[in-house]
Image 1 (cartoon, helix red, strand yellow):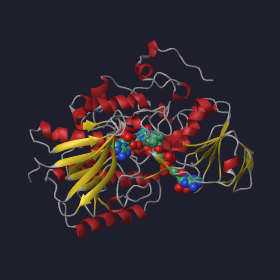
Image 2: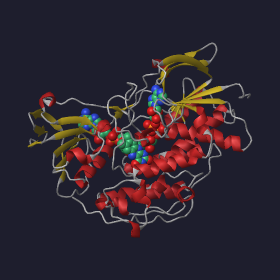
Image 3: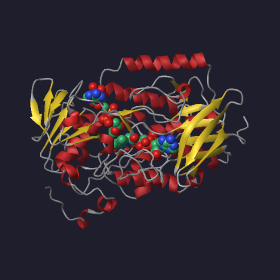
Image 4: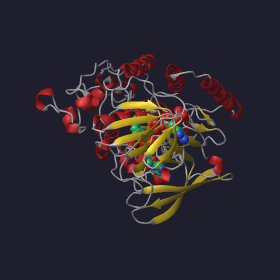
Length: 459
Ligand code: FAD
Ligand code: NA7
């Protein structure tokens, strides 16, 4: 296929969108010319979630703030499980580092790979994709775009559309009776920017997944008076230290008092809804929009990428995530090969059968261990279809399972463990300070050698 005159639009320059740019760059390095690529990013810089913003609500141009990350956020899984197989941590940092780096360090790593290329030239920053339509006759997408800086709206046509806009940005915000009269602060995890404001407060978190666990532990670490997690289906169920506990679901508030389904009640100073996010694509019409809950295999996408009704439309990173950066890579490589005519799609019916097979397996998942196996096999399936550099997925899967055990063993110390890279074989260093006593998440302190840092004492 002649791809020379084709145009590819990517929406989002987070890890998924950057993986797509990297995938095309890898081909260019082999001397194969790419089609014209334009990546639209509504923020002023790349990195998606990893590009921390102090802002909440709307950004400086009045767009909803994308970022949900916060200060003092450390990787919630071993870095060895997300390492790019074409750009190792060793290559980037030139020395072994620990297995659980803080956000600025992972942001630095993501940028390292792409900084060496001319990727920035393909990205139009401060540009929101406002609306997309597809013409059945010309088989082209029209994108309506807002140049936020210049306050200018324009449109362009593309042959392929790759949606990499993330799905942990639009809060799922439930209502509880009496919440309107709760005298303290109420926020969603999306607007949480760090534990500082909750020092000495009695904090109620709703939810029992990653956000509840991480925000709860961070607030405990940084001096909240108490942390209570309220679960709907299942508790996280680890042995919590004094000061953190789990209770069943909140039923209603009566002033500052929260009542729970087991009949207990307690007063709180503040509430954070750690109730997850909605897949939200306000720029896509009904018939092109992915409609799904947060799970490991959203329906309607062949290989978890190609929108089955219209495979010229691709989605990256829309799954719930054990694997992250390396999964986005394997998806991006395959999306690229489809655009390049190197990967041929079977018929719509055959694609549907493949999707069905995965959905049936998804329905049979019983626990987190099954979930890890499921996503591992999903990536194995993808990696076999492109030339993304192989890595030992069975070993990574084992690491994920060990990580789950580490967390169960001690939720406060699991980040002190170290793992071995499947890309380089390097054994991670122990961080110079135990995670519970490390209150500084800066890159400078993280990368400093032990003899250079003063011990930080909690409290
Ligand atoms: P995003 O990072 O969300 O990037 C999407 C990009 O699309 C953004 O830059 C956004 O501005 C842009 N965009 C959206 N809409 C438009 C539009 N209409 N027009 C133009 N641009 C648009 N993963 C880990 O591996 N380890 C962790 O420790 C970890 N911690 C996390 C903690 C939190 C609080 C959250 C929310 C997520 C965490 N994740 C973690 C998962 C994280 O989402 C992924 O690592 C990764 O950021 C997903 O990349 P993405 O590119 O798919 O989406
Ligand atoms: P998740 O993993 O989607 O989890 C959402 C949680 O919110 C989960 O425990 C849900 O309980 C709970 N939930 C959702 N709606 C409600 C209502 N109405 N009432 C009570 N509880 C509710 O989102 P997270 O934010 O934790 O994690 C997303 C990403 O952010 C992740 O990748 C991390 O790395 C950071 P359920 O079990 O469904 O009953």
